Length: 284
Ligand code: SAM
Image (cartoon, rainbow, N blue to C red; front, side, top):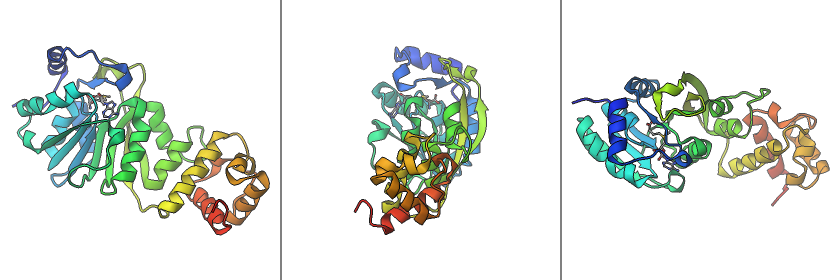
């Protein structure tokens, strides 16, 4: 059995389904089995893992995941692809029975059967950040993962404070996990070739710095700070907290210089602001 899907198989499948890849769904399919095996290796998928894949498409990554993981759950929005996937896996994987396909928008999913442990996906680029943040939030059993995203998005997810790429996705992702860029992927491994470069990001879950109530306040603070990222925090947080004077008082209580910009703060700095806001009873 050929446990790999290359350019020939992918094109034949697309022809069979009369599939015209939809840009709106980020349908750029990987046609190089080596890249898929590399992604699964970087994700350190073990035989004990329940892998979750968002957007399996025609199955090139799914087949590589099935060969390593105990089970795979794949969530695909396109019903033609979701219907075809088990049939393709039956022909290309000894472990096709370990696959569960859910035909749904990944952004609507609240639960999946079992407890997924690792997220491995070539994410649809237009929804990659909301999907990643949602799955980190909704599926605490996901300990780690590797996702392929647009290069700029990868840079933002893994960015450190004080850099031009540091922003809302960097801080929110850091609440849940440690994010590291682990590789670049050329355009020629996709059909059709996208007009953007891609990178691989590996994440490892960490203990969150606080509870759900704190997280909600931290995420609001982050949204407010980066909505006006060139402004000092006392001004950028003014409308969120009521006024610049209140923002200054909250920042002083948090031990943060009010003249700093949001881009200078690690997630822990935003936690200090959120705790000070709670302690001062602002917004309650
Ligand atoms: N994993 C496949 C591969 O590497 O060849 C396909 C990746 S392609 C970049 C993205 C896939 O995500 C497509 O199959 C697309 O139909 C699917 N998709 C797009 N938006 C989605 C959503 N909101 N929920 C679930 N799947 C989605």
